[in-house]
Image (cartoon, rainbow, N blue to C red; front, side, top):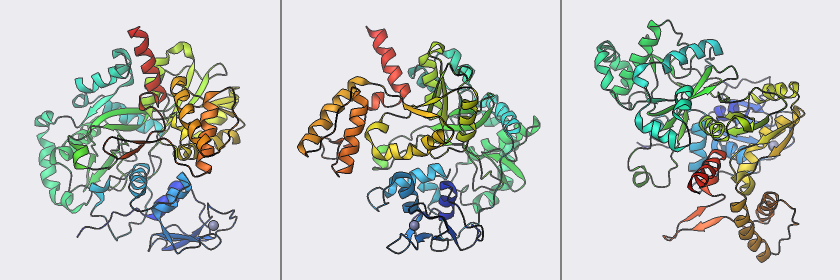
Length: 484
Ligand SMILES: [Zn+2]
């Protein structure tokens, strides 16, 4: 029987960092937390893990609402409505919690796994293991992935220096790892018993076993390293096919890995309106011995200049985006990037901002995608980042680009405002004006940036996709220069 996949509300409580009443335990069936919606100083929100719902004595009028709703209201400021935004919220949460998509979760219902915490190893250990992983010959970058990177503006030198790799592209090399194949056969019954493993392709698991055995022979530690897990007594690596993108700490050590997933053929026709999750952080959370904490990390491109008061510090989302932007800007621009795995993954920011302050930096720049100016929900999601900056005594500037598109948007929103008698004072800055108009329209409940396609479906068009990300914009500029 098919059942809706379920997200444990306690994982959402964890993710959102809600304060749990010290008198309670997050592992019990019901416990209280500080309500994020009213000015709750005590612990008025009850979490019922058995029913997977929350409700606040002070502000919840209706009966308990679910995990998706809790996440949606905190992160996007909007309710989760089935059939409207629930799929999107669900996919987003799967990504934030490092859970597989619905196909991998279909069978996971009812039982509530308790949340045993498995901590990650320190950066030296993780960095050493990942360095050896990236040096594993069968993961060499494919020509196809190299071409993709070149189209983004990377040079061969940078591609090699940044150590991008290809994962799960072919398994021809497994012929040399017959030990792993026999190991797989021995472990087959344990694999079939595990709900997360039983749907995986045999070659994928054999390759994971081969990689793990290779790293163990080199003396690497696998316990506490995200992506590695145990089948019986044997270590394996959780393979997601795609391009591997290293996430590096400020010392340049690889401390996390992201996969830019290959889109399966015919995805669109097979998966109507299901969002394809392009980037996934390599993780083995929920698999035996898999790390549960600290999987996502902030990324610092190798091309960053030294952190000093003479550089522009830009906060963005996505390691590959930051790498590409660094490459396209060149070293003369003196831009220092820190890239988050997602706007929710802000744990490292207070420490980083403190360091900025110590280096004499007064201001950081919001370099998130340009829909931050026109999409209220995107702006809301980024708020946590800027609060942390302000708490550290830093001011925040919004970095904007593509003035041509902004002018187009200005005219489009201007007409809407005029039609609804909404008056927005203008400044001398078109980006500021566009943002102000978008906010005013939102406040008045007027929908904007909706485009109706020839077939009648509506799409939200907050910003030109070709220049939305800072890397996209820099690339279009470079192409214009070479063309003229
Ligand atoms: Zn409340």
